[in-house]
Image 1 (cartoon, helix red, strand yellow):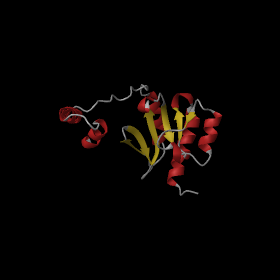
Image 2 (cartoon, rainbow, N blue to C red):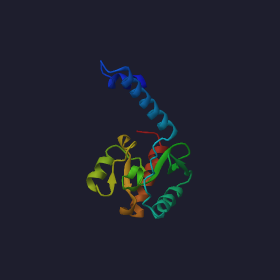
Image 3 (cartoon, rainbow, N blue to C red):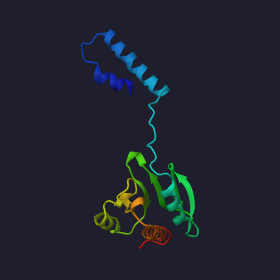
Image 4 (cartoon, one colour):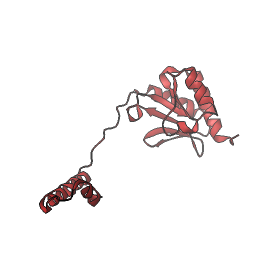
Length: 158
């Protein structure tokens, strides 16, 4: 990697001294990055715990559900697979939401119906999952979406 960078930065006719100086600078920079990698602060949390408690109550009311932390987020599992994830300002996106699996066409229909409540989440949105803004949906509707998501994962796909 260092030599590729040097080859791009050093022009024909540059003195040996300038090449050595560039080489030592690149080596120093790489060494310092390894010793002191840039720190990235986690995004600030927006939920005071209220929305997580709501989602947890609804998910854990389904027999066989377990909760584990996965990828740094509270995640709810059928006996073997994920069916709900709680996200709190994931990568500073501003959402306090649940990510839930949805049937074919449901994601698009929900987003079209209420784009302030539903969104296409990163990573799993391409597989039809739906993001749900928890503060903008009542318990009955959220519970129905959670149960649908659970059933979608435990039952064989159509």
